[in-house]
Structures are given as structure tokens and as C-alpha cells.
Image 1 (cartoon, helix red, strand yellow):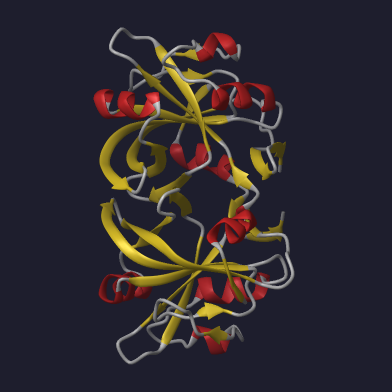
Image 2 (cartoon, rainbow over the protein chains, first blue to last red):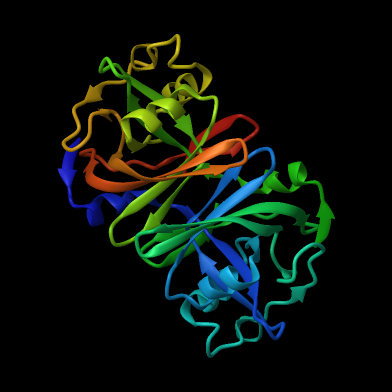
Length: 164
Length: 164
């Protein structure tokens, strides 16, 4: 193998699975962001982790409410995922802009996204500074799936998204 | 969406990218494990996170040496990845068993894997208990790529692996 700059090597990370993460503000208004930095973190109890850039609007909402929902968009949701990744919830109602349907969750305040193929309600259990991001670890307290299974949506590199 | 048990919903996570993580013991003997729970964690400085089951041999090696290397196997490495996931470094020399070639890293003690398509040398910056696993966050201090780009190897569910 050859030593190269990180920016060159990291291009080999693709395809990267995409998630939509919902949050809620103190007035009960939901927000949603697109993220690629997500993983499973524990089997018993089930936990997931996401890494969120510190300036993001959702970053503060997760810290305050300590709840979030991780949703898997299917391959038909390219437009919605692009919209949720291109705007900030500070000045945009992204559920309206992306025509996403909030569906009440069962154990947390942030909503599910009715159009997604799976959703995991999470309660924050750990918060770890990591460079310019924060790792949020959530315990999964309820899980949901859509009727129909789809292929997951992935970031393919070069700004392209597609199902795999 | 419909409320279902977590074990049912999490089947929708696939495809999941696979990584090989190398470590080294106090006598300088390298070990390697297969993991699926990996993500990027920071842009500046670059960081990555992995979640490792607490009983794993590599778990203790990361804690003691505080260094590890995250490698991306390409689609041709199915057999090697299965071997590294099916045995423990406590009683198996997995580099030998899987016929992997350790290549000296530049900034850390654990080796690169010459057959992989990318490798990221990491120094441990945070360690977070998460249920039955531990999240290890590493700063990437050097990066490497193979001559030839390949498709990454993914876990496709049902014990199958394939390139995407």
C-alpha cells in the first residue's frame, strides 16, 4: 500500500449508507437531518451511534431533548434526502420542504418518518466530543418498519445517491 | 410504519460495510479482527470510530496499546474476512490463517494489511462504554491506498458477503 493524503484515501469509503435523523425543539416542532456517519454500537441493550457536526441545528436539539429517531430512507427517497442535507432546520421546515410525513413515535418525542423503510427510537446515553463533531450514543427503545422492504439508500461518492 | 421487535427491524440495516482492524500485543505480535460497526467521526482532525465487543481479544489490545489500523477489504477478500471473523487472536495467528501480509505502518505499531484497498492508522483519543461493546474513537494519523481501486466488501445479511 502507498502512503497518501487522508483526503485521497477516504474517497475509498463509498458506498456509505445514509440515515435521516429526527429531533424536536422546545415548542414541539420536528426537524430532520441527513447523515452518513452512523453505526450500531451494542447488542444488549441495542444501541446506535451517530456523529453530528457541532454547528448543526440538530446537534443542539439532541443535547437538549436527549432523544432522536434514526430512520433508514429507501432508494426512492433521493430527492428528500438531498433536501434534508442541503438546508438547516434553523430557517427551514424540512418536513414540509421535503414532503416528509411525521408519524408519532411510541417512546420518544421526535417523530418517525412515515416514508422510511425502518426507524429506531433512541434515548441518548452518551455524548462524546470527537474533533469538530460529537458522537451521540442512543439506546434503541422502539423499532419500526414499513410494510414493504426496499433497498437502502447509499451515498455513492461524487454527490450521487443510489439504492444497494 | 409498524412497531416491531428490534431483532426484526435491524435486518433492514444491510448492506453493512466490513472493516479489518489490526492491533498488536506486548510482544509485537499482530492481530486482526473483522468488524461491521465502523464510522467516520470527525473531519478536522480526521477521526474514525469502531465499536468492539468487550470480550474480544482485540478489545484489550486496543486499550493497552492505544493504537489500531482500520483497513477496507476489497470484494475479493471474502475468505480472509470470514476467517478473521470466525477465530480469536487468543489462540489463532489470524494473519497466517487468512494468509494476510502485514506491512509496517508509519506512525503506529499495528501493521497495515497489504492486500486491503485502504488503511487508516489511528491513535486512540476516546473510549466510551456502550452496552456490551466499547466505542473506540481514533484520530487518523496516516492513510494508505492500494495501487488498484476495488469495490468495498459488504455484509449482505444471511451470512453473505459481496462487493458493492
